[in-house]
Length: 382
Image (cartoon, rainbow, N blue to C red; front, side, top):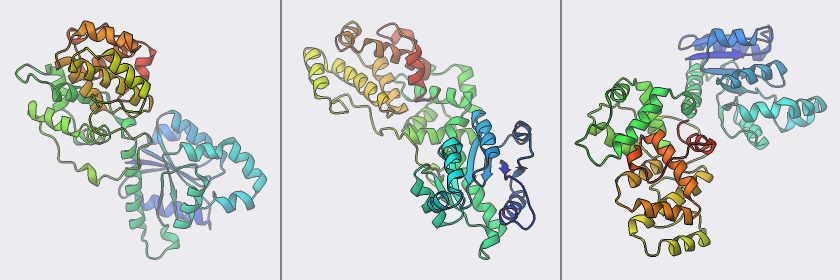
């Protein structure tokens, strides 16, 4: 792990400077550690360290804001330890006017856009929570102020905190190979004919070449997207040996947009739109059960996408329904037009081609590849 610490300046006879010295010295035993101050060149510091984590110590420092903005724009994870400088009392009683201006200018942005905040006490965490700017907050006590905490213990807890941040933002870190692996897993895991060659040699090689850290991220994605059973099924079908990683023991912050778990319903509409449910009944009254189910699934996919709740499992089930279930394709296209669903259906065909390798021969209509497709795909792997 590579960590870049930022402190405005390292001074003698200064508690914050002593804390950073103790912390960085202890971390050097288990990580690559770099330190930047206001005298450092921001880009050079980031280029040299290539950090997994940028850790900013203190608040109200405009140079820290510049560092964070540059780091965030380049995809680095930033965490902040305010060290008691932010909170209700500090905001109201210490340099109130200056802090009010700085807060409006950049401080609120820093806290809201950090990956997490690190408090040094439960009281500080409560003060940060009261502001409501950031929900991801942990506490690690400073060894220099608590004789019961050793430098080594503080460093171990800090690595746990950094790892928690990294595991929470695993999607940002997923490589193209990992994303391709997920698509292959959906394609294989939902297949009905196991006698056919399910993947070409290049995709099989990609799957077999994944390292444990890459599988760790894929498993975390599988947990959040309700894909774990499909991953296991795909691995069994292509005789793929998976690493033993218990994701239930991996600490992470709650996701900002949790997906709906379970199957994509085909027997009812989610969201409680009674007018839409009545139109579906009237439009498909004389149609087969398969057509009614596929149309309901498509409507539910649209609803869940709008709420940012459609999971990759739902995508896999829609892929399975379109590819393997027997239905009248011509009539299905007519129904989607009557339901004003045709453009969305064609967009989803493009998404399924991109994300599950759905072949043209199984598409009931011509796929539509427009700007909306990219917006949809960003909810999965893009």
